[in-house]
Length: 312
Ligand SMILES: [Mn+2]
Image 1 (tube, rainbow, N blue to C red):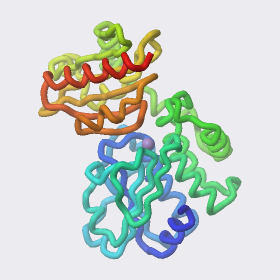
Image 2 (image 1 turned 180 degrees about the horizontal axis):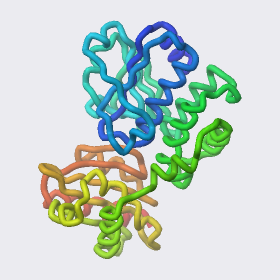
Image 3 (image 1 turned 90 degrees about the vertical axis):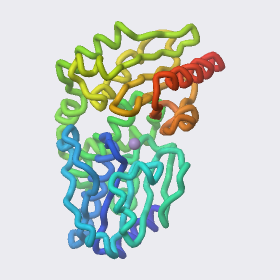
């Protein structure tokens, strides 16, 4: 599979790399890390990053301006994206061929080559695996290492979540031999603003926990406005009470203009199928969904409550 992907990369002069909408550090880290890998080995190829630029992630990489015409005859590689609706910039369809590289459960099959490994901590971990197919780790590109390290750190919650394996640590060990500042990455990933910190205080005081161990927080539009925090920023504090004793799984309901975002996390029962029933999906321990009314959030909460009851 990895060799097949490398052969395809060799075949094409232009390679456009996509990832999911509302990107996280693993999406951008794997996307831009793959670009570095390809450019390191094949400096004559044109490699471009597609998708909307997100200001909080420009410390990792900037996206490229890509004209429609550039897609003609190009190879498209999509990183970290389980389903086609979530691909940022649907012009990926204009490419000649698509390759999927991802670590989410493989629900939506797309692309002429699919490399999906749900046992990988992150797509960044998979890109490093691809790079090891091409070269010794002693020859690693520093910028690629920085990007992939950031992706792995973010998706594993600093090597804390259950997706962290022996391989993850081995790979992290290889990456930190490259020349980049880990301190800089941590500062960028985990620095916060006063409004978000104040909202965290509010969330900690307003958190509700059911006897089953299911926790929930409602963040209305008015609350977000009051704290001057965007829905996207609020997502960064979804783990702020994960250490609570007795807590099994929890949900943040975050109201946006015409939708209520559902952010699910778990330390026990798997919650990705629940997310799937409400227009979402993700990982067994971290998923997202969306509903259209506060009535519907009660349904989500009831189902989460049931899952926690069944999971002693
Ligand atoms: Mn990921």
